[in-house]
Length: 294
Picture 1 (cartoon, one colour):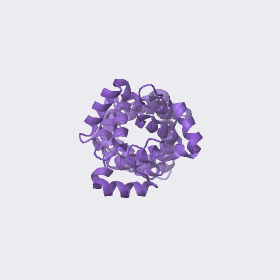
Picture 2 (picture 1 turned 45 degrees about the vertical axis):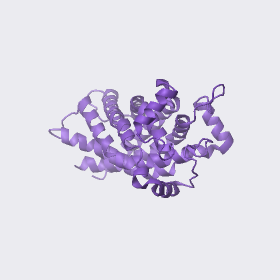
Picture 3 (picture 1 turned 120 degrees about the horizontal axis):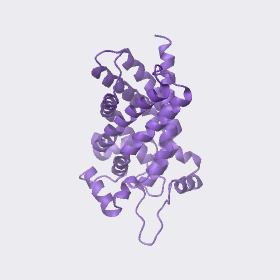
Picture 4 (picture 1 turned 180 degrees about the horizontal axis):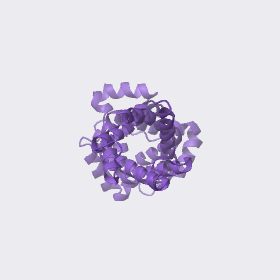
């Protein structure tokens, strides 16, 4: 089980790299996903990812792109630690021997297991992050101003207790189980391809970045619709969607059609490659460092 511990520790390093590189893209994504529908004849608040970025910087300054980063940065160490530790657990319970090579499906199963395990850590951090990201965009759905992550927690707890802090749990599971399965399986598949026969696990820094970036794109290509629903649900005013994610889905399809489920696609994909390339590069670097002392 030493691999579980090593992956747990190295996962935290990889997660921090992900947030630092990818948060500005994530802010743009959330603002686009949660902007209100324009009135007939009016232009939308943002015409696209670049317009959202320009408006945000012009009105609020460049650091507005990093709003809400404290929550995922604090939560990302245990989150990615649990994820990569969960991947190692999934590998451990499926292998008959430590040297047995994992198949694509087995890696997908490991990723799915890890996706379930990360939900308890993921949901509160995502809820806090999304609320902080949208409150200064001129369309804060809740109408409540938050002074920071702890203020969000206090006000959410006052509104609806723990259930309010964990709003979006089912949506997060719907997003993360298939996405995590794709994430790990594609990374491990590309890692073998790039390493070549007889060199499994020995990747150049460039190959690691490429495999990680493409795995991130695979992850998000699977889960964007669920992520749109989650963002809407987690930033809505208390009581707006009594039926949860089903009510959000009905509203999106009624008002915007199926294309509404892919809002934020451009910033998601722009973020996916560099953020996840950084994640796996940090992971592999940390694993190499830790193994020097074992």
